[in-house]
Every structure is written in structure tokens, then in C-alpha cells.
Amino acid sequence: AQKITQTQPGMFVQEKEAVTLDCTYDTSDQSYGLFWYKQPSSGEMIFLIYQGSYDEQNATEGRYSLNFQKARKSANLVISASQLGDSAMYFCAMRPMDSNYQLIWGAGTKLIIKP
Amino acid sequence: NAGVMQNPRHLVRRRGQEARLRCSPMKGHSHVYWYRQLPEEGLKFMVYLQKENIIDESGMPKERFSAEFPKEGPSILRIQQVVRGDSAAYFCASSSTGRSSGNTIYFGEGSWLTVV
Image (cartoon, rainbow over all chains, first blue to last red; front, side):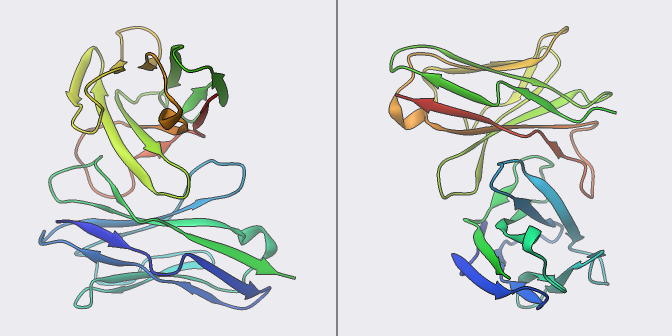
């Protein structure tokens, strides 16, 4: 069965430090996509970064980068120089090969940035 | 260029009432998806619609839940005879095609249903 696992229910990080949010996935598909979303307390789901399974380079978007280790089936999100506004829930999700919409979601990690 | 618009943002219903959640997809998008997020959980797929067609409703409960995406107007997710367990955030997303690569799914801000 396809599954996303986020092992850190919550994290506290000092402002300006880098933070790594863990995500492992389970799939037998050869082609798939991996996403990270941010959900602040206001509730909206904000897309952060995407990695395709065939992408050879790790995806980066500003302060966000995705540490993609295909053999380990991990897709950790790295946030550099954390800011207070980064405090939110973070979800890792996977799109299976045969679907553009049935994203499979992890349970999320609650990140709190301390001043 | 408006994104995916959902309303209402917050809805309170008594047990047994009906809840209607609306979603206007991003301009030019004809594919709409509904997801449900229970407290402290990730999103779960419910239904995928194109204009006037339900493509995949495998994630939607068989009873009390229905969805439509008419030729004109927003997509509507309807929950009849709501129960406390229906309390959740309901997210709508849209895309321009049904199958493609990359991040082509855009989410609305969600509708929070509370059943009292």
C-alpha cells in the first residue's frame, strides 16, 4: 500500500536556525511526485515545493529545499534560516503514477519557531 | 487572477441539517477535487469532478454525501443530515488537466464545517 510517514509530530526550532522535516514514502510506482505543503493557523494549504521521481537534482524554492534520497525513499524538507512566520503545520504528500489528484498525505509535523 | 475560491470559510450546522460547500475553480480550470481534513490529520481524497461529470468518487462516503460541478456555476459538495463526525475542513482544488506532471493542483483556502 502506498503511504507517507512523517515521524515528527512536533518540532521546536530557534529562529534563524535551519530545520529538517522528515518524510518517508512507500510506493512501488516507478514514476511519482512528492510535495510539501504548509498550513498556517489560518488554515489555507500553501504549496511549497515539488520533486518528481525522475528529477536528478533536488528541488529548491527560495529558503526551501527538498533532500530527495530515492533509494531510501525519503523526501525531507529543509528550511534554511527559519523565521517566526514559518511556524505552521507541514505536510508531505505523494502523487501516485496513475493519478494527478489522489494525493496521499502524511499526518503532518507541527513546527514552532522560537524567537 | 483569482485562485480557487471556497465559501463559506466557516459553517456551523446542527445535527441533522444540510451543509453546502461551494468551490469556484481557478480561471481556465475544468477539473475540481474535494478533500477532507479531519483534526490533526492530513487530507483525504473524496471526489474528482469535471464539468457535469463525476470522474472518481471513490473517497466519498456512500451515504449523505454528494458532489456536483454543473456546466455553469461552482462545484458544490453537499452533506445531508450532518453528524458530529462530519466536522472537518473541506478543501477544494482545481487543475487545468486531469493528468500531468509537476504541481498543477491549486488548493482553495478550505471550508471549516462544525456540527453542533
